[in-house]
Amino acid sequence: MADTATNPGAEHGDGGNRRDFLKLTAGAFAAVGTGAIAWPFISSMNPARDVLALASTDVELGPIAVGQAITVVWRGKPVFVRRRTAQEIEAARNVNLSELRDPQPDQARVQKDEWLVVIGICTHLGCVPLGQKPTDERGEYGGWFCPCHGSAYDTSGRIRRGPAPLNLAVPGYSFSSDTKIRIG
Image 1 (spheres, one colour):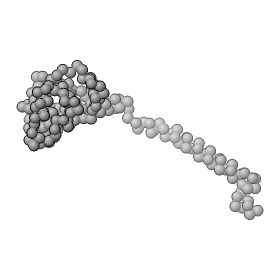
Image 2 (cartoon, helix red, strand yellow):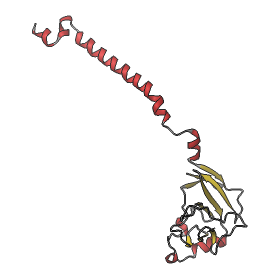
Image 3 (tube, one colour):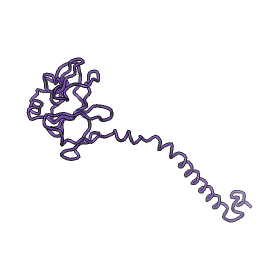
């Protein structure tokens, strides 16, 4: 009798085991059901395909001639890709870093000497500087010029004159081949 008081299933032999099995089975069904209900909600929080497509941009470098620059859009921002001439590379390398407001050596801003990739937004008030087209004003340093307030950038995208506090930002990018880069 004492056994049945502490373990009511003992009277029938394996009632405790059946109860444990039923609890475990009910718990498993509840967990699967909760997961099946929650999955669509969790999945809806993932970024859409069009957003993921903007996360990175591939740029074909083959058609860009020496001295030419193109603008691509990455995450809604203009990105300047310039194939620099030997003179532009030399001018960028020969700058005394102590003269720069935001000192960065050219080698820290490029992965390959002839290719410069920068976000084309002036660091003063968010304007888009001139200098991408051959007919654009490039300023006295041969890079980019923001006519809004007179900021001038050199051939490495570093601020040289004007109110802009920082250099043009360099986005994360990598060379996927000799003629192709992936931004982002």
